[in-house]
Length: 195
Image (tube, rainbow, N blue to C red; front, side, top):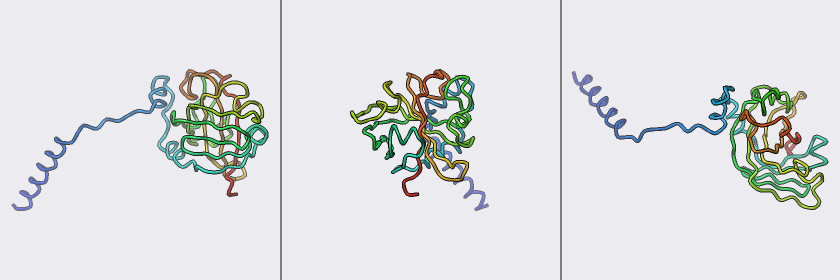
C-alpha cells in the first residue's frame, strides 16, 4: 500500500511540475525551413555534428586556388583571415548535408566540393570584408562581392584531413533552392597547419 501511495505522490508531483514549466518550442534554422519549402532533405544530425566538429585555427593552403588567391587561413567562429591581404567577418547561415545541391540542378555539394556524401557543410553569411591592395584576384570571388561561404571538414581520398571552402556571390544562401549555378565563385582547399 505504501509503494502505491508513494508512486501516486511522485506521479502527481511530476504532473504538477510539468504543468508549471514553460512550454518548449523547437526553433527551426533557416536552412531547415528552406529545405522544408523546397522539398529537399533536411540536414541530418550527423551533418550538424560534423559541422560542430570543424576545428577552428590555422590551416595551410593546399589547392592551387588557395595557394595563389588566399594563402594560409586562420578560421574563427565569426571570422576568416587569410595570409594574402584579406579577411572576412561572418555569421552562421545554416547547416547542409553534402547531398544537398547549392542551387537547383547543380548536383550534390559532395560532388562539387569533392567530399564524402554525408559530410556536414557549415554555411556562413559574409557580413563584411577587408580586402587589401595586395590581395591577388581581388578576394574570394575576384572583383565580385562574396556573400556566403560553405565550409566542410573531411578526409580526402588519401585519408588526409582537409578543409574545403566554397565561396559564393548572390543574394541566396547555398542550399536554399533559390540560388543560381553561377553564384559559385571558387573552391579552396586547406590542410590543418599542424600536419
